[in-house]
Length: 252
Image (cartoon, rainbow, N blue to C red; front, side):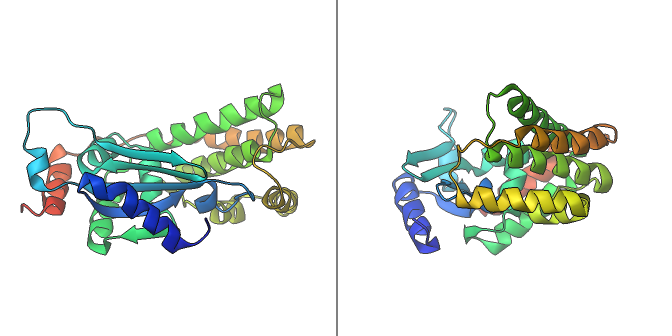
């Protein structure tokens, strides 16, 4: 499954029985980040909205739609759930809004959600999300738990995203390349590009012999980011999120 129209067709099959409208559907993970392997899954993520009547109930209702079928890994969040998570600084959601691989999107809804995300961004929370991921990958590479190139690139991207957030106090670019171009030295970039070619030609779980060197590179950038973690501003009023919710529901 490599064609965008095939992904969109699978998405329509998944969501149609739920009577929802997809506001934004993207590729997440390695295919969006720019370092997919030959056997990488399609990690499709989306935000959807129900008719207004669905929300007028005292009962809790399932606010997730998901399916894992072969290399098609799809998961979506209801709009209200997405906004609640955005208010908490949920980084995966912010990455969905910035993914360069878009399968389906309502431009007005994306503009509204992206503006809200930028206005309410929590840099300290986002930085710690990426720092935690980078530390985990360094540990895996050094311990032998996971010595794959996938672990290396996940860890390096996370460390570089944390550096961007420390410097700019804004969400980091979703693709790996802009942060790599900004923060890797020429020697580092040469080595990373060689690893990238190796990963693109291989399989997700392939192990590689230079795991210690990769872990050391991640740790170098991780240490810089750790020393410059920004502080979160005060959280904005929930009214902003309520306004966006009502606007996208079409009730204001």
